[in-house]
Every structure is written in C-alpha cells, then in structure tokens.
Image 1 (cartoon, rainbow, N blue to C red):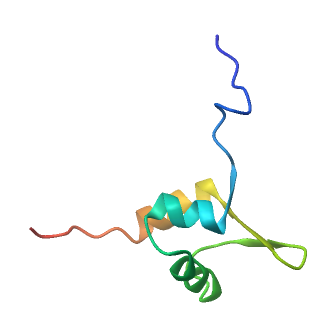
Image 2 (image 1 turned 180 degrees about the horizontal axis):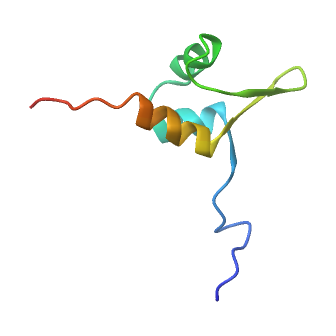
Length: 69
C-alpha cells in the first residue's frame, strides 16, 4: 500500500487563493462568498482564512445547476 507524502497528499484546508483556483473564479469573488456566509471558512488569527476541502465539495454539490447548451 502506497503512503501519501506531503507532496502527493490532498490538502484538507485550502487558502482563499487555492480555493479560488479550484473554483476557477477570481479571489475577490471567493472572499465575497465567504463574507456572505455562502462558502464556509475559518479565520485563523488576524489575516489567515482557510476553507475545508470537504465543505467546499458540499458547497459545490448544494449549489450545482444544470447548464443548458
């Protein structure tokens, strides 16, 4: 069985920039979603905000819509 190393392990907590990259949205839009309480996040200290990957996946599942072509 292969052991995950820090390089290959999936991060449990993402920065706002990493979250925005995952969602393919601007970082400012990500901050707006967090401020409005739509995207759950945790503030660590004065400046650090983290988004839990599982909560991000739940957010995506709850807010998905079928896009007509």
